[in-house]
Amino acid sequence: MTQSTADPLHALAREHLPDKIAERWIGLLRPGIRLEKATGADPVAGRLGGLPELPETEEWPVWEGHGPLSFVASLDCAVLPSAALDIALPAEGTLAFFYFDGQLDEGCAVVAPDEPGSWAGARVLYVPAGVPVVERATPEELQPYPEVTLTARVETTAPYLTHPSVYREFAPMPNDHPVGDDEFQEALWDHFDGTEHRIGGHAHPVQDEVESEVARGALGSPPWDDPRIKEEALRWVLLAQFDSDNDADMMWGDCGALYWLIRPEDLAQQRFDRAMFTWQCC
Image (cartoon, rainbow, N blue to C red):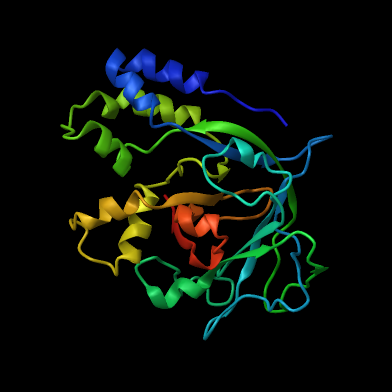
């Protein structure tokens, strides 16, 4: 399992930004885990699709009134290089992610952070190490996704331009602030090009920062200009994001991605029932 370094992002910052601003921006970088298709002798840290292994007593997740959720991915916490992260991911056990993907209603019902009645449409289940599990068949009304095994490597992640941590560091930020320079932002986009399955670190949004979407939902959906949203957004960290993936036949809207976020204190207590979900597409 290889570990990347921060050097490429450091180099990008120092190439495109004034020295003092570059160092301040580098201070916002966070370690994450990138999940990629496993090949050859790569250690398998998880998988997309296939059939989940769950305790016999664990009911398949269902969104009441809509139907069962589709199994998206599972992660083997003991194999993930989680010691490199700045979040308290479990050292052992399995995380399983489920999502109501529209198979049953042609995409009519949408799971969104500003719709509390939809939150049951996305779930994270944690199975502690040592708990007996069995492979569970997909509910007959759903088509399972093809299985794709995943390996993991540590990478350094960068905050999105409108992430509240960027504003906190550089406020006030005029429209012509160097961090927002087109060439710098394009270089960052190119650096993270490709399928982005990620654990921890900064989320890689398809649109705007996902932290504010989740924060607004957690606050009861106040107006977008409510200053509490940016404050609350700083309390949420990325747990996992799963990109559209041709190998797994996963297409979230128009080349979109699924995101689960959680507060660090809930993660430390393994309260995955308190994780919140959002998704974005082009």
